[in-house]
Length: 305
Image (tube, rainbow, N blue to C red; front, top):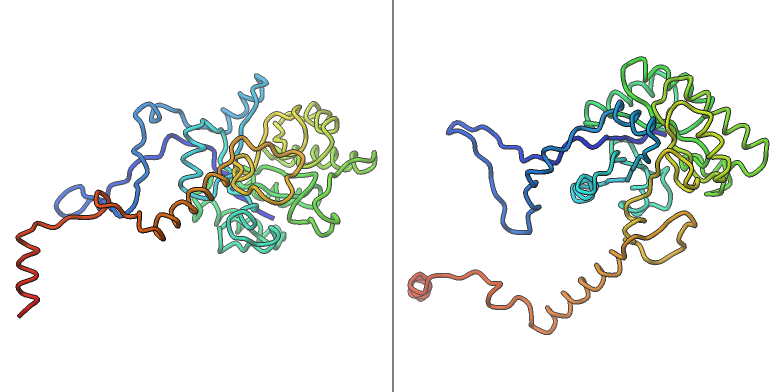
């Protein structure tokens, strides 16, 4: 039921270890290294909860994107994404599971099956301490209010999540739009209010009608983050792999827009590399390491002995 949230701080910094002889670091050159952070990125201020409240107050859309790795986090940082979200969707897009419930807490320090207040609080504390997160997201409405209160009382910010809650997709009869009738819509709206009263700093609205999302957003003091909930929410979140078009095949959800076709280009690259190897075109001489001729001669002479 848990996922972890990390508001973007500043650009990633290089960490150096201090050894006996002074500052040292090892450099690995056997693969392409990430580029060094640019100086201008260091000037970017940390995104805090207060900053998110200011964005909400000024009706500035809040951006949120899933990240599962250093490269995906770097992309989010460089694009000035407000919130990095380590979501349970990684079970499917990164680990190949058929649904999100198969992910364990130890796999990503972000998932908890037990919703008892004591266990939930312990899990939230573990996420913050071990996972270096700054907030947690909790799915559910009235049934998780006591948990939200306990976690926020411990000083850990909580984001709510209502509508389609992927961890309960079985009980919801699959990944379907929620709140299409008046009774269900009222239930979702009341859950939003209960979560706000319990102390969440924001609420994800997933797969609900856009008009309902607009009504709920207008009734709350805290911002809403929509995914499949229309453009009238306070901000939007997408799975980064969806936004980048990493997975080109299969059925695309209605709410997903592919802003790139990374999957297609990546496949072309893999196919091209395999073809180059099979045709003896890779590596070329300029891509091979050299050896001084005199050292090679010594090697050959000693090899004959």
